[in-house]
Length: 114
Image: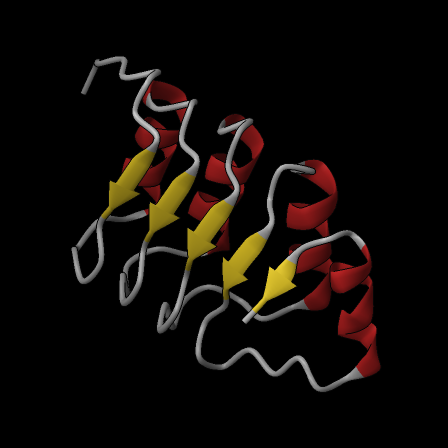
């Protein structure tokens, strides 16, 4: 796919069969995204999410609820928040458990993780 939609701000793709390759294309083609809804997208991993966070420089909200193949590793989440200061809200995968103190720095960066 070769397209450019730099003014697209909201993209809702819940329960679709998109994968990391599709997220890569989206990250390159829709760099102006503010909100991305990927709820219950079982074919994506942290690699695809990383591309979106790195390339969508205005991203404020990302919904990864019930994305079973996206890791819940604190280092990955810190990378997302630190590398994308615009990120304010992450709906984390259902296996994410923020009760541990090691998750507190995410809040210190002004990002709400649900």
